[in-house]
Length: 327
Image (cartoon, rainbow, N blue to C red; front, side, top):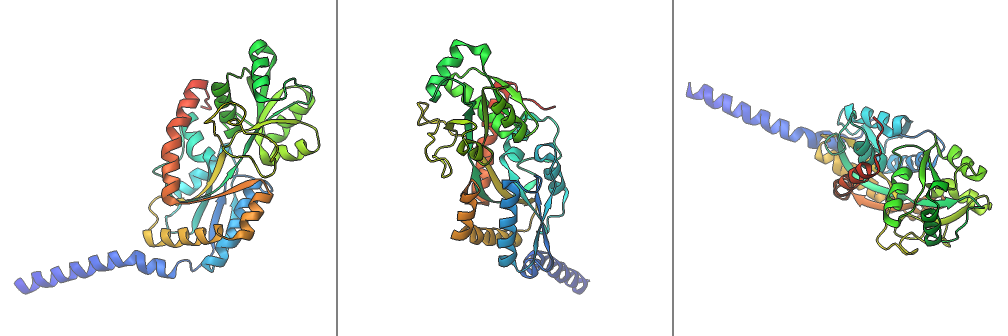
């Protein structure tokens, strides 16, 4: 009986050791087939380009193809739900955004994912600057002049965005709170209709991305007032920030990050995070990001986790104060 008990005990020890060793052994062979990268936006835009550049770099580092799969819809909710339900085996990765992780949870009562519990954070990769722009005939050349004009005639000004609950909607409402700007929000279904309405004079102002606004600014079709981030943008070096325009401390960007489903084994997480860090360290890739209007902003998974935890309550406060809701 004692011999039998001892045999069972040793068998249990062996089984436990096998279980503990399994993730490390699995990671040793990972990846042994193509990896899928879910991008929550349609092909052709800056985010899609970012995803494809990173996928190419990761393919080289991991030794397997990383294939981009575009899954747009519902402000990144569709893609987020797909990734949250995927197996945590390292073969489904996600190019998430601030919209996914800090805006949607602030404005939607029902989501198919939780920003903190449904994903394994792998790293921050890039910021995209936001810009306040004006119709060419809108009076006021500086932000302070514009704020004074809107306060004097609050019913005469409106600003366009590419959708309710979007990063530019949050940026516009934060700008109003910080500066006292008086302008009614007018949501459109995308940057193109919003900026077309601005050029046509249907709205006097708009908040949009540096990627969408720069060609129109350089063509003289709209006028930049201020950028919303903490630093001037390489594509628009002549445009002051909101902080430089007399409102110190203001900072609002949209940003992008790499994630995987929750429960990704630590050895695989470490392997992907190292590969991603190596990709982001490449000077040629970083210059390509700058050229399309993105600011490289590498940070490991721990930095991404901290950013979500820090910004989520702030965005919930903005949504509550400005009554931003989607459902």
